[in-house]
Amino acid sequence: MDLPKHILVIRLSAMGDVAMLVPVLQVLKANYPEVKITILSRKFLKPIFDFSLTGIELNFHEVDTNYKHKGARGIFKLSKELKKLNIDAIADTHNVLRSKMLLKFLNNIQSASIDKGRKEKKALVNHKNFVQLKTTHERYADVFRSFGFKIDLSKHTFYKKPELPNLPFINSIAETGKKWIGIAPFAQYDGKMYPLELMEKVIAELKKTKQIFLFGGGKKEVALLNKIASKYPTVISVAGKLSLLEELQLIAHLDTMIAMDSGNAHFAAMLDVKTLSIWGVTHPFAGFAPFKQQDNCILPDLDKYPKIPCSIYGNKVCNGYEKVMYSILPERIVNLV
Image 1 (tube, rainbow, N blue to C red):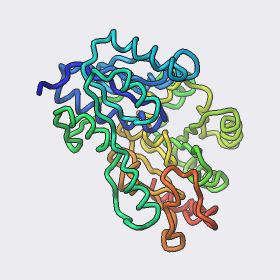
Image 2 (image 1 turned 90 degrees about the vertical axis):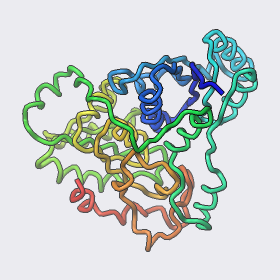
Image 3 (image 1 turned 60 degrees about the vertical axis):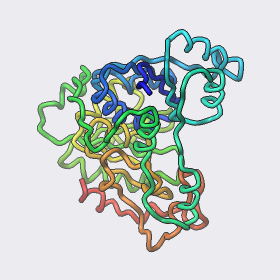
Image 4 (image 1 turned 90 degrees about the horizontal axis):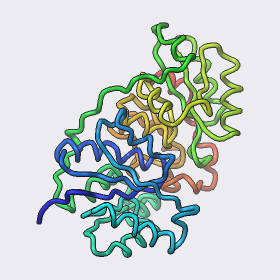
């Protein structure tokens, strides 16, 4: 069977999961530069695939599930748009209701969908089989392997660093010689978030010798990070001040990123930045550790909290496990940095 010449890659959300696609696509394009790739995702996620960050030429097709492509009619309309692109294979790396519906409308095109390993993950949460599961990166790679592509993620190489965004506050500190540390203290669920009062202790110690950048989004997060930054002259909050592309360009120049089990950890990892990821009620065994950063995962006291992971995504917290993050001392994080 001939290899596909034009692949549609479906991944509609979330930011971290989309970012995990990048190293897989980099290996695919390095081995098969003639293959055309079109990403199907949400408009605001397009900067993740920018050539300045990835080094690979990609096409991007926007999906608007709120209006234009909402519901079955919208997905049918989307399928008509995609038929015009002369796609000969579809890699569904999301495998949700919308993508399944789209595959049905495009049933004349060969397709493959990600195996999310739901049974294994359920066994992991129930502690029936507490082992390292296949990583999400490998699960993505399996989708492309099913078409006949040979992908060895151990042979992945990172692209060169992008240019720094031309911003006044960056230009003013670029020559200080201090190491740049990024800190992204928020996560989608409270069970995955290191307590802000403890993270401020980390910031207070690191700011003595490092240049600190704080990352976050949303009005509440922006306000909290601005409040912290106002206390220390060597701490800059970029929350709400940069575009996503500018944020990624800045992250690429960090010496270390400190993040939760969240999107910012995957942004840093895809850009070849040392990433300390802090885990609460989730566990890297589920396969969501940042790319090539498995050894830099900081876990709570598992002897004290043996039921971790309480859930795969952090949306469920075991009874009595609300304060697992407090078993990770700020000094431990500082020493690792």
